[in-house]
Picture 1 (cartoon, rainbow, N blue to C red):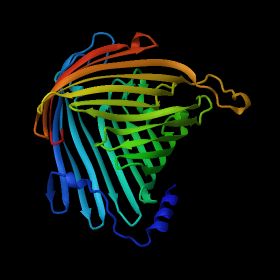
Picture 2: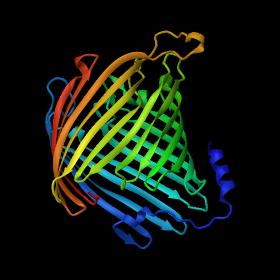
Picture 3: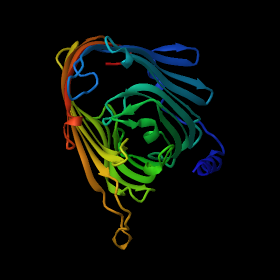
Picture 4: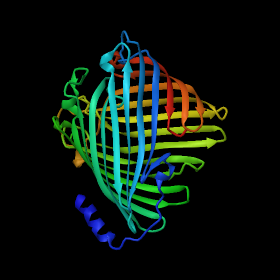
Length: 409
């Protein structure tokens, strides 16, 4: 894959002519020479958590806060562009000091626009102590890093192709455990991913996109979860000025575990995040369906279906209210107890396992001071239910104030 990207760069680069490229740095708030940047700071969750550890019995209550800075930056050096973003966040708990943590997330990308192509290289690094997805309820120190290389090629005035490859690595704290399982032994992994993306501009506001991905996941300490998979997702991207804006992709994934005792998966996947604006009302809808790896050896992966709806009403130029709700379903797939070939060589069917359901309801009110400062108060009620009984069943309420500065509201 890396060789294909290098060959494509060599074949197309030839004579580089100037081309018009939209410059996202134009929206930056500050400029020092060729450097443009937009800083920000936020204080969130300044309030009460009635179930800090997501426990079934005797839930623990604590006062909480999260605060930290962030910055987006752009740097034009001749024809090339360097961009990135970085943010940090300190999690504070009043009574339970072992839950306090400093989180950081950083991304950077270098690209070189040429006549019909734009080669790029990028990387990301995260070091956080948060809950890992919807499955693991403990806050666990996790480190992830990735590097990607590729190029986009302009085929015509309306169509482009993107070819890229990514190498990523995820590690858990070697002392971290959840319900008796060593998370590092189960989930530390290295992955390769290849992406081929075709984009065709239908109108000035709408682009048709087809994404084809290949994944090779290898786990450092437990080969049970090693797998190869492919995913094809056509869809649309709509610009913010469109009546309906955002992204909507629905497609197919084939998941092939290397261990014969782990069932294969074939089915539809989705990634939808769209907004509809009518006068002072903004309706947001999100839906995601894909596979995730589980820490459980008896159920090494699950299908996550995540659906959410939010309604934001701008009451006046300064005040807004929002209500939101979402549901997540985790459908686990059990490992087979015996190794048997499927009939006529067909893939073995997925064995139904545990099913967990999470429901979240909330709302809030906010006050805007200009375009960059917002004061808000939000509340979120959450409840989890599981087919495996009361061990994973809990509920709680989180109420907190928030202050954000530097991000356009």
